[in-house]
Image (cartoon, rainbow, N blue to C red; front, side, top):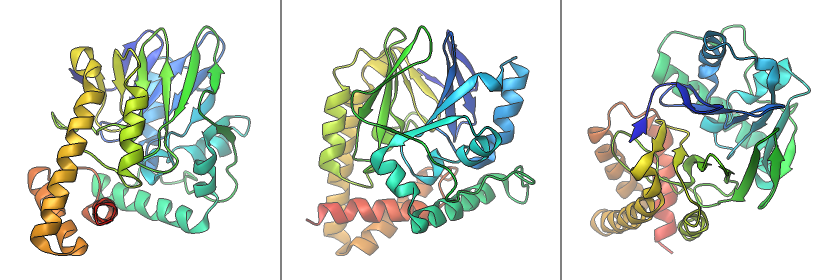
Length: 296
């Protein structure tokens, strides 16, 4: 089963944002942590949702960046500038990416491209300083690190593959996993695979997570998976990954080049999923990176 709508999904655990760009608020007895950071256009939604549900934004003392792609870091600059005492966490590699001027330029460009795709001429961010610059600094997370928010521990796993900087969050007791895109993206009833960095590491990261007793998977796109589907989701992701690799090899053999195979696969993707949130030009880069891995 998949939960798409924002709201409370467990005791002290809230899904915020939009279906396309999900973030999660985990409340502890002492502080709260925002897990993942979505896209900037959801900022007004976050504040509206928290006000509607009687939350105290000042209690949020931590924000965890699960990886440094544009669609997972968007609310950080505004929150950090509004609350300089707020602690921001990412992997060591994640902070390297976010210190790279070229990467930051891409983050800002893609964030605006997707805002236009999702909102058209509407600009929900007017007057809000959301753009990434070099003033956002934070803490480094590594495999095995833990964060105590009062009565709850948040544990971290390094799970590269989708990106070189990906981490996942595990909350024992709740048995909830926050893997970002280190597992399949749960669009509709599908398992969308995006492995922009390394297929071998992606599969190894799935094996690392497979030993957890998962009751909920809180994805960064298209909501939360619960129940029986959550328990089998990592295995389903592995199967879908192997199928994707086979389809890509077939496309390479049929089309004869990475560029043409990527264009054909993208065309097919949007014929099936015309409302997919990522702009085709952006997803084309991901498909091209995946195909290049399979050429050896």
